[in-house]
Image (cartoon, rainbow over all chains, first blue to last red; front, side, top):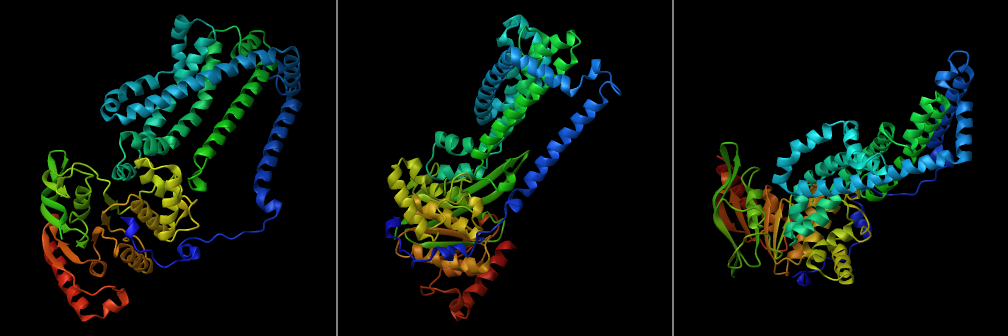
Length: 288
Length: 254
């Protein structure tokens, strides 16, 4: 019967504001605003330049280029491969494996984590089994996966998915289990049913866990896919490394590694972007 | 006046290993429609346990809670509960937090928005609709919680030391606002506190709890309304009550 409540005297917004921090605009120069970031990036670039130069200078004298190659050769190999399409063809295969493996593993892991952690008893029963499966080195599964799925892309996708699954599963489950009991009770008091609790409290609250899982899992999707290719394949960046190494082409091996790290970097940036969108409500210090 | 909320023979135990911890034993209380009952007790006397039971959040080990003549088996949307800690959803801004009870009831979006905007203004949070709870001070979060509870239009309101964590000035301010909101609303309020002054300032009736929810004193407060803290402090009737309640608290804890 709030309709009958007496409205208190009109109060200024500033009144409520006095009990909180006050925001004022601040004039800052470009350097004050971005100086720190600019410095960090400057030093990063400098570091790369110094390392590459040192490598280039010492190649041939201090080190045998048969084993360590040198930056100019690596750049040359990258140019050559990019010209004849080798690079794009193999990269595309690996990227597909990573993306499909990641999506498959992440979706299954998040779903399983969400459902299982919501069912107290089921979680307690299955927890040790999940931990045992999680602890198996996924490389050890590769031979089995070859028997089951052949040496095509399926096997790499599933190997990457298997790795991603457990990381996302465990983090999601932890997120769901750490949901504040008080928030659940609040929804119950509003007359919310189990569905309301799951959608309006557990899901948003466990997002932090899910995102941590996704973030941690990204490099593992890459690892899963490349290891699958190294074990048995006829295409992909892992195959390229194996092939180059077999011909004692170290420049080719390094060139492939460069491509792999670029792919990993791009993937990390993508996850960072998602995290920032979802965690807007968190204190700025806690946003990753 | 009719009884709205009544508890009969409530006992609550929490099992731990081979032992059961008794939080409340054989507690009975009836609350009349439209009254403002303050429950005074020291920490650990089972106040929060009692409110959780009255709100239907937990089930009593023994005894029955009845609301408007019917046995309470779970939370009832007609009973609002302002808990001691903030339970605003941290990922929702003030506006969307206040809208939440309406959202769960399936109220249309535009209607929700109007009601919430009105409530936000009534608790003095206008201009902070788009702020997330962590961007608000403790007092503002309390106000937002109050607005959210009112959005559910409860006829009975339970409050568990709602202003316990605030500084003295802000507490006084919010106490006065609470009285203004309550007066003439016809709502029934059960207000739990450990502060004698607060209990006397707000209530029509004061219930002092001893250990395990034993009722030490249960009496009417006839101090005239509107009451203000500063005037009350020097009122002989108030001072007399204050002394009596302090003695009752002491008796209850021994």
